[in-house]
Image (cartoon, rainbow, N blue to C red; front, side, top):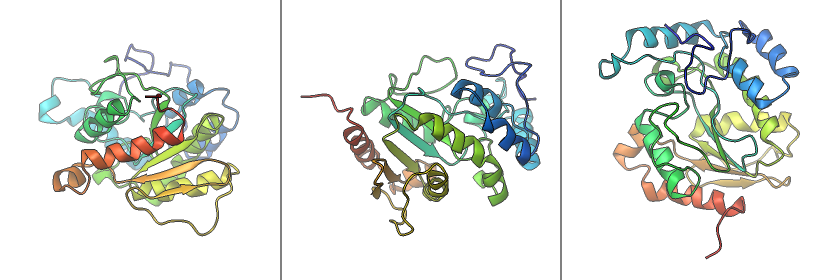
Length: 265
């Protein structure tokens, strides 16, 4: 069973009075006049617009993985994590079934998150090298991490319809982040491809011809925003050596430099 809002889960942004999106139309309506990123997070965390994703995330929260059988699962959509005045934004695909769907925080409690937060810490963008649970003291510095799709999908594969239904949440979140956002790091081709139409809708000058996704690929917009491609820190990529720690470090070093966050020697 999913965690009920306002029942004491660390960092739960919602309350019993938070409005619930039950279809795509509701998602659009609830993002149009949301007054702050905190209010947006609350509404994201209560979304029930995609029946397949709702059923899956709650089934996982009920059945659990044996290693976490004694734990309570979050079982709700997972919001972005990090400050509203972030200069670097990291965009992933979706929460992991036994990661963010369990802990209630994006990229927290799974192997992908171990790699990501360790790299962020080495780059000076996270205060701790690990992220294991909501309320563990982890804090991001000038950085916000979020996902294209906010619910854990079966086989980690959201449908195009689910991606599009979730799109207004991401679009509105990036709108809140825009005043300070200088770099977007996309983790994987799904995030790379999903980002461009959203940037266009937000008024960024996105040309029709641009670089295809690849690790270390970058594309600077005339507006001053830099988009970086990075292989996703999935077990498939890290176990096979397709993505190494040094490759991940290089991407975040570039992001830190471009965002003007490098400390003088």
